[in-house]
Length: 331
Ligand SMILES: CC(C)(COP(=O)(O)OP(=O)(O)OC[C@H]1O[C@@H](n2cnc3c(N)ncnc32)[C@H](O)[C@@H]1OP(=O)(O)O)[C@@H](O)C(=O)NCCC(=O)NCCS
Image 1 (cartoon, protein in one colour):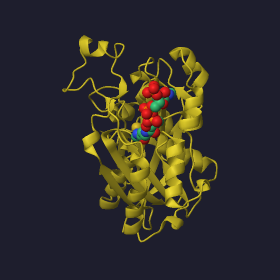
Image 2 (cartoon, rainbow, N blue to C red):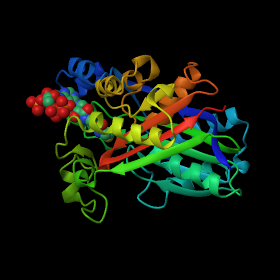
Image 3 (cartoon, rainbow, N blue to C red):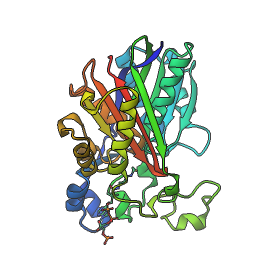
Image 4 (tube, rainbow, N blue to C red):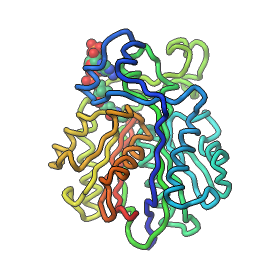
């Protein structure tokens, strides 16, 4: 049996910091107390005017490759998970391939919003297991959502931020990758997203006038406040059951980083202590498709993830798409 192993992680956090006080100045109303109390966000990082999503990817990928001892020419496949691409088409992965000099790599983008990186990790891990021509695979999650924010909309500009996280996958004959479980609730596809720029509502001056002249992320329709706390435990239990493992076998849980209160409620529902999870929304804001690899990298760097540990990843995002995955840490 071939299994995918995570050889190394990397991340990129843009330099520019916006504190809650900075956002209050832009919005002209208080949000700091609400953000700290309800979601645990204290500040966020946003990319510089000259940066684009592919640049975020390049920084995170280069760090992961350096740590894995892998050169760009050794990468067989490069997958970018993002819903804030450089262009509608072609894929941002092609841009990143050129910027990295990964000239032997196949490329594609994967979009299942904020569940995209865990979904990409699932596909890439199964590609490694199924086909021995893939030895080194880069899986990057990137978020440049500050370019799609309406700074007058307090429901979004307070939460979303920019960043990227990456892993280099290799092959081994012990697990590694233990499985994944995906699920969507497509009936909420019209609840949260960027609803211009595609065939449904092309980006014309009329449609863009609604959102300050650029496509903007919006919460359009309510979905149940307990959506994640209801579904994450079920998803994780199904995943662990298939691997014949229990919740107590998991050493580290890493969740989508939108709301610390949601993570606390989920850990309580799972009967697990908060010491077995890790969060970064307090310092980095909500970085969507990048937040899980960024948080994983932070946990690894802080010594919270060690060789032999069982790591459970659980994501959800617009769509509403969900993805969970289980890894035995081998690095
Ligand atoms: C987004 C989320 C934090 C909003 O919290 P909520 O309690 O549902 O907020 P509501 O929309 O009901 O708003 C209630 C009040 O909170 C305040 N509020 C809501 N969002 C706010 C924000 N981002 N910043 C500041 N205040 C906010 C407002 O005062 C609002 O009152 P108003 O309607 O009179 O203006 C919460 O729904 C959540 O965690 N959802 C999960 C989303 C998720 O995980 N999605 C997948 C990943 S993308």
